[in-house]
Image (cartoon, rainbow, N blue to C red; front, side, top):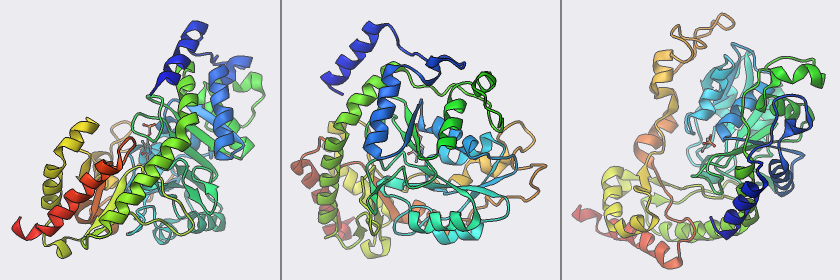
Length: 411
Ligand SMILES: *Cc1c(COP(=O)(O)O)cnc(C)c1O
């Protein structure tokens, strides 16, 4: 955050219009000047026809699931390795999340597991561009086409990544970005839905802003999922978002350069495999996710990481954000209480127990062995490459890993 953001906020405050939406069919239905300018600039930067600002990626994912016409009892295939909202979005529409395992090397949802999870009730696939790398869009999109189902791309973590020259976020029927505080660029909270499909865009705009109060005057006749929420981004956030978008490519280039350098240094350590870059793709390193080989190191992951962290204390303080080096990412999400106890909306097990779909989804331990193995033993993730880290900072990090590797027999 810099002077540009301060000036933008002052400009909005001076205008007196901190948000300009009206939840009815009116010229302000689409929001105020900052929101609409951010949407235009976002669409241009990411090469999409429609960009629709929302107040979080979570809201955007919910709207996307609604927009694809999800029915109660539909099944939506999700990965277990993601932020929880990817897997709760189906529940909002009474649909059932079906978990498919992730790739052992790229960590995104695995096409073979997706294919195996498809049933006549499958409505959509939630494909996540995890850790900064695009999902396998060639394979996943082909599966979706073959079965006549939709793909929703959760691109909270890979803005600016490319897949055979195309922008992550624009690889599926509909894509969702996050502008929360932890992401590449941010507005505190915020998100963006993108699509080239006019009908999906229209539905997302309705769901964003009180659809039920708008459809009649707007002339919308298809009422499926036209229950609106308030997913509106404020003018203040949109003004900050425009400044952040203007800096995005500079910030991204620094992050990529840092990550590539760190990968080259960590590649010299036998027990660490730095992030793989999928063929035809670029990686934008939301986190730097490495594979750890405990057998090769002769040390469990936790012990190795504790030793590296001990070397890195000053760096962590510089970042001021607590632990930035950890093993495992999230526990496979089907192990959370919501799935284990099957209590989501109400106390009767809805939508897991669902009159429209008697099939009982599996959420037992062992369901996605690759994800479980990554979580418990193999994955190391950290953010010790974010701008404004310098080459010297990166060498501190790499030296810590190297020192622990070389002295592992003494631990
Ligand atoms: C951060 C994140 C989200 C949620 O973003 P919000 O804007 O906080 O709602 C969703 N999916 C993934 C993969 C994320 O990393």
